[in-house]
Length: 121
Image 1: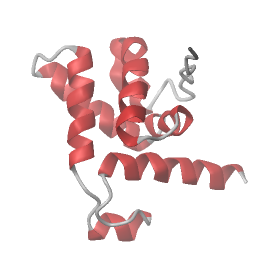
Image 2: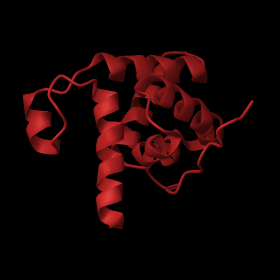
Image 3: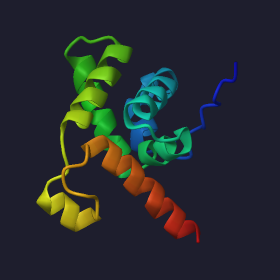
C-alpha cells in the first residue's frame, strides 16, 4: 500500500495556512485530502490552491465552521461540500476562464494549478 505524501505549504504567512493560525498544522492534511478526494485533483494542485488567495477564502469558510462549534474535520468537510455545491457562473467564467457550470472548488483548484504552471514556464 502506498501513501501519497502531503506537500508542505509554500505560503505560511497567507493563503489557507496563514488564515488557519494555530489550527494550520492540523488543518492542512485534512483539507488537502478532503479537497483532493472531492475534486479528483492531485495533491500538488490542491497545495497551489490552498496557498493562493482562493485558499484564504476557503480557510475563512472553515473558520466560520469552527466559530459555529464544529470540530476541525467537520468544518473542513462542510466547507468542501459547500464549495463543491456551488457552480461557476457567467461572470466568474468570464473573469477566470473556468467553464460555466463546473463545481466551484474543482474549477478554482484547476485554475490555480494552470496559473502556477503558466508562471513557471
